Amino acid sequence: MNENPTPAPPEQNRNTDPALPTSRRELRAEAAIAEPRPEPAAPPVPSHPDQVVASAAAASSAPDEVAAPAAQPNAAPGAVPNVPPGYAAPAQPNAAPGYAAPAQPAPPAGPAGVSQPDFGPANPPLEASAPLDEGTFRAIREPRRQGLALDGTWHQISTKYVVSQLVQSVFWIAVFLIAAAVVSYTTGEVWPWIPAGAITLVIVVSLVILPRQARALGYMLRGDDIVFRKGILWQRMVAVPYGRMQLIDITHGPLDRIFGVSKLKMVTAAASTGVEIPGLTTAAAEALRDTLIEVAETRRTGL
Image (cartoon, rainbow, N blue to C red; front, side, top):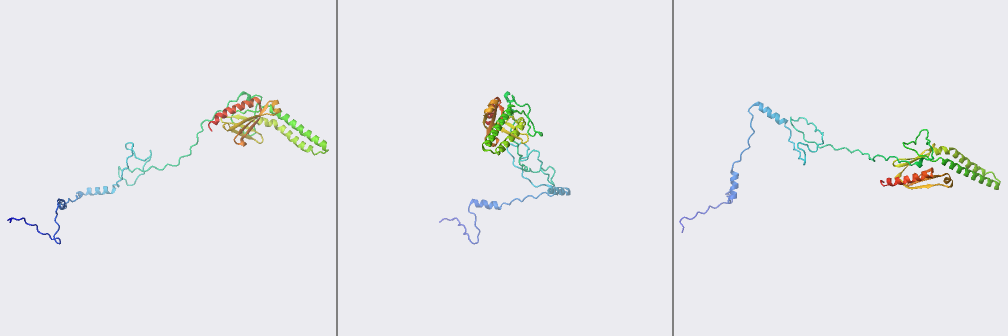
């Protein structure tokens, strides 16, 4: 038998004795708990009464900490973000000297004003060819208040228009009187002369004012449209854009061909804007037609 046997560890009572650490980790945890923790240092106590008053004033006037705004990329050094030029931050009461106010967001921009469209400069008036003013009236007749006068050159109709209309009116007067005489002779009644006399009176009145109306007819070739005017008592002025013209028609009857006058008609998409210029000479009607067709092709490209 061994004379010096190893003594057995004493038995531990699980009910009364505390548990002993059995690993190195548990031993290190118990050592860290057992080490004394340093206490936080107390603020220094001012020894002089003036230092106590100064520290209390600084604590009362110190502002709250303000978080600095995040720096924007590609920003200039010292620039304040999200602030338009010339915008000043509102002053804050009770601010300490040297305190910079935080950046304020820019005020919302108001609704932008409606910009007017820029159509560019107007096209210059068209150059009139020589046949447009050959054999026409020399001065256009204006109303007393000149409500239809425009800046530009008015071209008038031919003087032969009045003679042509006079001959045609006399021809129709003769037709109505001959018809009334034939009916009255065959029937033995007088009433056929009543309508014939009324129609003759209307034609005579129209012939009296015809020269006045002919002098009030005129047209102007502007940069973008042609303007036609007529009338003294009932005035009318129509402007037809060159790009809206679809058809230009020239008509002349038997008596018109004898006197060498024609009527030019401009047809557009709207039937109410069609314009008829009577009393043009044949050369003037053809020259005006060619000019309108040439200009209409260039103006139609922008529509």
